[in-house]
Length: 82
Ligand SMILES: [Zn+2]
Image 1 (cartoon, rainbow, N blue to C red):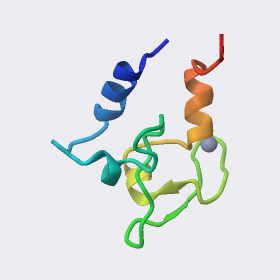
Image 2: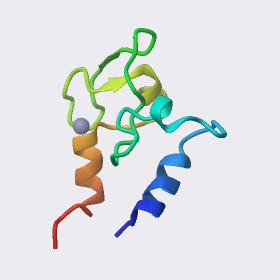
Image 3: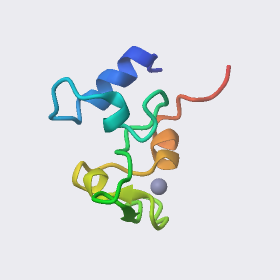
Image 4: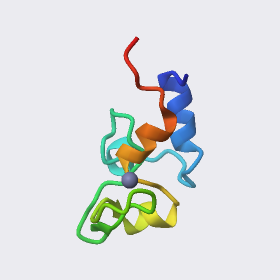
């Protein structure tokens, strides 16, 4: 199981940025998503490489090798309420 601190370290391990603003970096800054926020220059137009759902990833997500939140959650399998 990952606690929030470990999760942040996990997310940060994918980032080359130092001192980035979480609100600019994460689509869901206070959630558990590692995905980049979509914007005009970074539209969410790519399918998830795992489940194939369209429009799940931005170009930066794809470049970082991410998958969609649903697949990430499933992979972790850690979000089950006790
Ligand atoms: Zn997916």
